[in-house]
Length: 94
Image 1: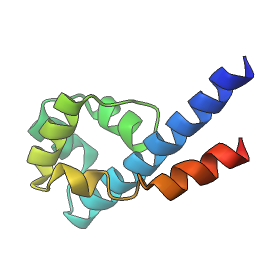
Image 2 (image 1 turned 180 degrees about the vertical axis):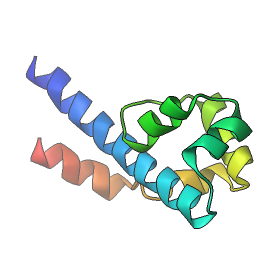
Image 3 (image 1 turned 135 degrees about the vertical axis):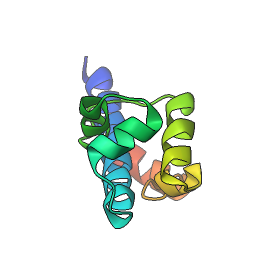
């Protein structure tokens, strides 16, 4: 039970960081959630869920959103630290 909770906590952290970055990019481009939803063919509530870290997007969704925002996928993921040192530090905390 504890292991599952730890994994969910880490997953949620990544989703929150992704959501923050998505929101930052969208706002910097002066695009509303409604406009992004229209451009990417998603519901506005789905965009909101992504920005709040409540949704876990697939690669296909990341591609559609990046294309809709005219940014590389890497920019959407830039707040997430994928380094080995970060993984080891997180493992030690658990």
